[in-house]
Image 1 (cartoon, rainbow, N blue to C red):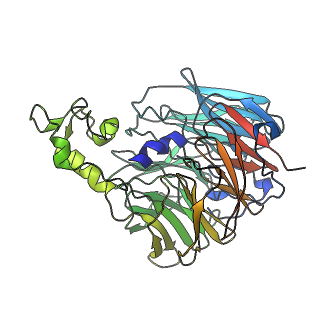
Image 2 (cartoon, rainbow, N blue to C red):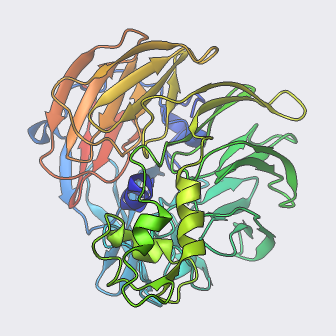
Length: 463
């Protein structure tokens, strides 16, 4: 449950190599890898070392970088805002908005500007669950908008849109009636919609295997399954079962191997059905929010109440805690070259709740709360090193990024840890931005961009 509660806070809530000329066009950059092969980024990311910093309105989305712009989304009053600032100076270039059509009943930790925008280099595409999709040119001109009906997810919709061959793809794994959507990026016209037969929501962002080729496949990681879809038709190409409940971390791919992560949601076991329904004071077999108040799960009543009628029955509760107790959690390597794909190895210990793994220079890294960093052999799953990041014993929900042989790990509490990206990793520096961080950093044009609760920072190459 902890993972679910945090997922939307981050709007969170890969392995391909990138160059700075490609920009940082989506959540976690080139094909979701988190990697930019540039040199000279600083290890000291203290506020006073920033090239620039500007105030930005509140939102959870991560920055993208395209065409000399850094773009984020936010909520301002009753307007859902897409904001672009100059990559070199931080000066605001444009600000556009769509109306907040409704106010969804979602967890108080989250908000309506969670998903990270994406770009094809010519347009920026923003997704707001309380409105739908909107496309802007790089000059801020609105190109189209597509309103979508209300979603059903107490923890909000956090999956970010991705692009493949002119199709904008949006994963909508809500609590009921989940679906995958394909939109013509040029016009906003719906091309296809595929219902997803999964039993619970997720907050992962899809990634594309073999982008730009005839073999392109959209990998979607949701509750219990890793699925592959055709980006052109939306048809499901294959399905691999055997995964955990309500995942948050997105899939990453290196060559013919995918890595997916479903945390142990029952690391702290939930109260049993019997113990919980002992709180049924009026004996009607259902719990109200008030009756559940003494339970440690009182704060997630509306997530447990899948029917949405304000009453929690035994079946609803039993199904949700059975999902949390799924034995299929783990960090899993999947052989995509097999037909059908097959599991190569699985690790079950010290798993993150939210942060997406990163595969960099043939080492796989995971970071979890408490500043616990683990390096793995990506071929065998062998643990190479596990330890705590000195000076950053925080929650680590933003996903790591990498460049120049270093990992950059933003913590929820505002620390930025820089670690030598080696099997036997070491901590190089820890800086403090003194404000919570919900977004994953972006790297482009020789700079790193970090969004905190109220500011956007640019850190340039070291002198």
